[in-house]
Image (cartoon, rainbow, N blue to C red; front, top):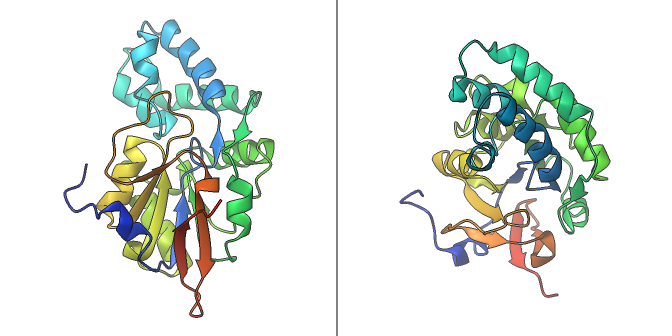
Amino acid sequence: MHSKVPPQNQTFSQDYAAFLFDMDGTLLNSIAVVERVWREWAVDNGIEPNAFLQRIHGMRASEVVRREAVPGLDVQAEADMLLQKEMDDVDGILQIPEAAAFLAKLPTGKWAIVTSAARALAERRLAAAGLTPPAIMICAEDVVNGKPDPEGYKKAAEKLGVSPERCVVFEDAPAGIQAGESMGATVVVINATHSHPIETPHLSIGGYSELDVSINDDGSLKLTGSKG
């Protein structure tokens, strides 16, 4: 990945201004829904589904459809259809282990969600997983350029009034990891939904029970490894 990635132990030695979270695969597990909907779309459009499903995560639906360049398809119409299918299917959506407990430790105004999902879909999935949205949530319709472009994460940092370099980006997909790296943030990789954890120089965890957080006197945040 990025040549300037700090050693993992530096993740625990720094103070941070805010935490920025991806949603799917990072705070909740929606992989069953995503693969049901997108596998059907791939088969219907003559795309080999197994390899296809490995390259869709962390991207907006419109960008996936556009990239596949299936002749004759209306990109926005297909994206709208896929959104509706995903809205109608929340069966099997689960919280990433201890996500709610970890978020409950964070002060209001110190964290945000940055997701490639549309806002309506994000709100529906968070509710299905038992998670409360933060005050600031940057969704698919809030950016011109989706991940791996860092636009969404930069907008979240700006709305929180903090420097991007003083944020931790929590991600699970290569596109989001690249977005966090390119804006100079510290990245923590969540591998709870990976059948084979991705190779990464970043701190990688299987769930939030592996982390703890403390609030410094100046309001900054510090990550620690869980004592449990």
